[in-house]
Image 1 (cartoon, rainbow, N blue to C red):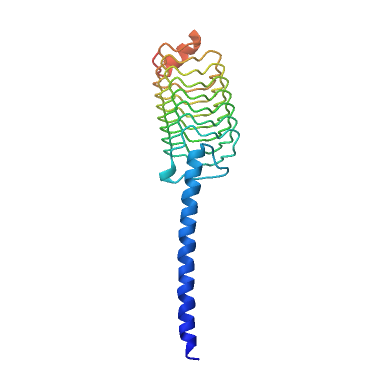
Image 2 (image 1 turned 30 degrees about the vertical axis):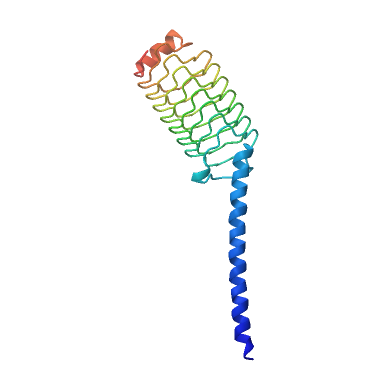
Length: 218
């Protein structure tokens, strides 16, 4: 009987030691997994949020991934490949998307506010109601993209290629479209209040008169 308290105390010490060892092993395993992920330069399927310390995702390949609702806020995604990816409601606010590839991606209601997508390709993408407020998409390629209902309020689209795109109901209020290519774009019901359309290509005289009447700079 006298040995039972000692035995219980020993078992408790062993249990605590086992928990500490298990916790240390888990932390080391997690650390290795994160490092392998970063070094391998390709994405893990199905993640929904990126830890702040792991936000350098430049050059990663997300081709065809299902990333609905993914949180890329503030991430470095320069040169990342999102072609044919499913990105509905994904959050790219403040992200670095320079030279990123969104060719034929689907990004309904995705949020690109204040992101820098200079030189990025959105060719053939479907982006209904996407939000680009205050974003930089200078010299970006939106050829044949469907951005119906999207918001480009105060966005920088200088030199962007919007040729043959669907831009019905898009709000370009205060946007910079200096030198943008709008040839063949469907701009029905688009809003250009205080937008800069100087040297924009592809606008008919009727469209110029209409947008100037809205307060655009022609």
